[in-house]
Image 1 (cartoon, rainbow, N blue to C red):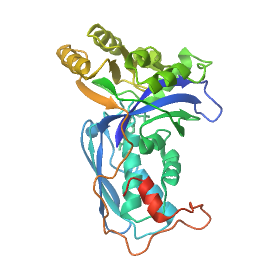
Image 2: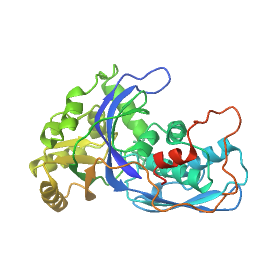
Image 3: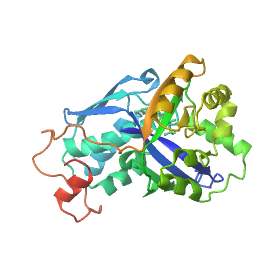
Length: 327
Ligand code: ATP
């Protein structure tokens, strides 16, 4: 499952429900966590994690992958469901790239297959929205405009591939802390206008045009909380990036490059500077959460349906499986 960048992140004023209304353009990029789901004893839902930054992630019931599996198990009310999840992380934790949401998306998809649930992609995204605003996009992938809390998605036409260089920071930033600081800096929020020039640039596939229209309203707050980000941004721009954006609530910085060659040159130059913990080259857009190998005999006796009273789509199972990329 892929990480995301926000090519535009327009943040409105804090609403009474405690959330900020957003207009955002997501792009999924080729930095992936991997999740394996194996059958486990009835009622057992567990996760083990390895890789990038996992020392700081709890593997108890608060883990987003566990919460995703539990949400499905509870919704279907079958006590025989169990799963042992293993996550290999490459997406930086608390890096503004929605790594936790990607793991939740993967757990939803994997458990729906393992437990042979009667569920289609749209329903899976509805479950995702209950877990976090970025989860529906992690399932969908590609490039999309998100409104509401960022969970109401419409795909956006994006031609070609864009080459990005990511600079990971030494320490993460808490998303709620960045939003709180944003509220102090911008008590009235920013405007939520549709980023039409950016959408037009995506349709042309022209990275130079895209570079002119990137926007992140949280950038000032993130840089205020982690001032070293400014040196990272400056170094990337001096080394030839077309543009720099703080990714989501930060602290990862994403540099847009003219082409693959420019991205290779920038990643080499940036690695030589002492401005990032690690540097990675990625492309976008890429697909959302996908099953790499599948079909597990776990709980396959009969296709499970949700508890009564919950809507199910009326299409054939085959078409649902095709939509989910389960083939
Ligand atoms: P956001 O999606 O809010 O922008 P982020 O991308 O900055 O978040 P994440 O890596 O998603 O950061 O982690 C946010 C928080 O979620 C961290 O404090 C982390 O401990 C917690 N968390 C829970 N489960 C996971 C998981 N499976 N992977 C990463 N973080 C997790």
